Image 1 (tube, rainbow, N blue to C red):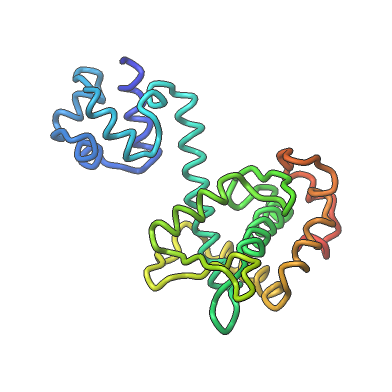
Image 2: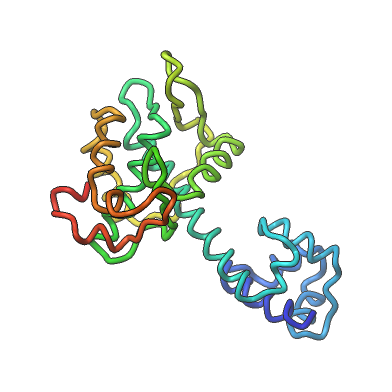
Length: 235
């Protein structure tokens, strides 16, 4: 169990939590938690399971520093991606009802990440995109949509024709966090360009880009491929 003592301090720093907050999550007093972090206290299985549940990972993963750091980075990227998703709906939704197709939303987020990389040499979310039949998309897109729907931050329905899933913000949507003013402006510019275009248009555009054309089915798409595009064909 020695690894967990170091892990707790690592997690606390990465999550920006105080010892009081960590103690509350684990269900112990702050002095007791302080002793645990020093390696002088005991972490019970029950406490470990409570903390793992809070983080959304397995208790066993907390005992592996390298694996946990990777999982923590992924969770952080997903949180950022959710903020991008909510803002893209706000900016790119239909003027009449605020709805957007699930596929078009995924394309806007792809363009935001890869165009941001084109400009800054780093992605906005940091998630890996995969070449799927209906377009470049991170595996976590589906997780993000499902979780936001469960939290009642977005609503999902079918179009009047029943051939597309439509997504819209709900009244309880959380305020936009995790995005800088520059990132919000960037997403807004992309959405403005595609707001009045249909889903087929944006699908065709992304499928004509090098990141899509140079990768095989189900492969992860290297962000670096977008650098080879002409500026007018980035988004």
